[in-house]
Image 1 (cartoon, rainbow, N blue to C red):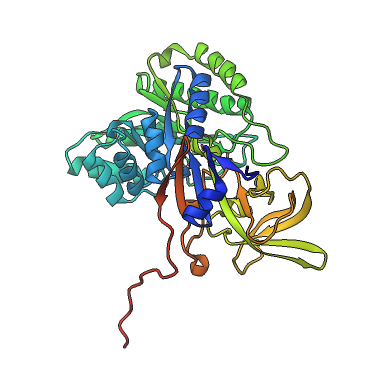
Image 2: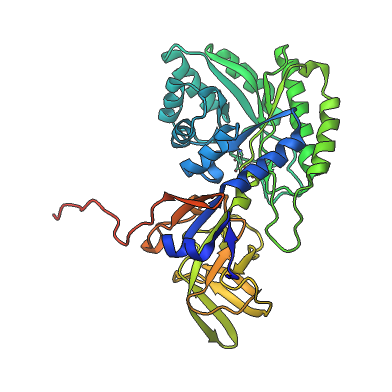
Length: 420
Ligand SMILES: Cc1ncc(COP(=O)(O)O)c(C=O)c1O
């Protein structure tokens, strides 16, 4: 019998042996459970689009798409991943403050649901592409709201921002879109912040987006086809955090839907969560290389680090550096606790994965697993820093494992410059 961590029906020790460490493991059933719970809370009122940036591994995107969601993308490459995962073009929306002209042309050529315009210049660029290619392009105006999501970890509204067009300029943006000829204004998009754990704060933001939809209806004379409420649904990482209360979300949303103004009759509501859908499915697994005491502090040095998991080191936009939930994955049954600092293998003090964590005693060769690592993990990390190999990624589904990214090698092929 093992007292090691089991993930998706498989012992992590076995996966570490088979695929090596460091290693990301994603459990398919956890994505399904998050989606089912969210669907239940949203009833039939809101459609779900997966925000691909949270975890763009093609197999993870496919799990989401197979579960019936659309995709929110932020680049032409993410568009290709969504399409390769089987997402129909009309179920893709494209947001981002600096989309390239080539990216816009790429998605227009291949077909897309909506493009969320974020600046006057982008409206002009998009209009020119649409006219040149003789195609009508459906757009939504992304609005930078007047107020931020109080209670979220990273605010993207309520202040000067590169994201979206200021709410105060909505009428101007509508005229500019109209003036392009080939752009068809279909709706509105608001993304106010990420990692929101308070359902009431979340729905207050959504209510604001709905009121903006009403303003848009007044400006255009018709109900917008869609109002994209954004993502931002949080998951608990730290000891003092509680999961988003989906029962409250459900009740608050019902209230919002019941009070939708007649001007919005027929408007669809969308959400585009990333973290909530895939965060809980993932663990990042590292192996202890050395344990040492320096001036009274016990350091555990592992073979991974911030180059694979920047967020766990506290360097991805966190104001306070706090520890992700992590465990001694080799000794889950050991109740003893030791206070340790877990560091990665990079030559920088930034590469700290846990500060004064209370863990079952760790020895060289043991596995340390960082939980809640399915979103904003590998691809949100500086993987080139110190030129370590990329970790493998493995998908587990009811006791079966499938590699979905091969481990990198020490040598990355580089193009040699001619010697002058
Ligand atoms: C436009 C947009 N939509 C959706 C998301 C996904 O956010 P989250 O993972 O917090 O749900 C982001 C994240 O930055 C975003 O910028």
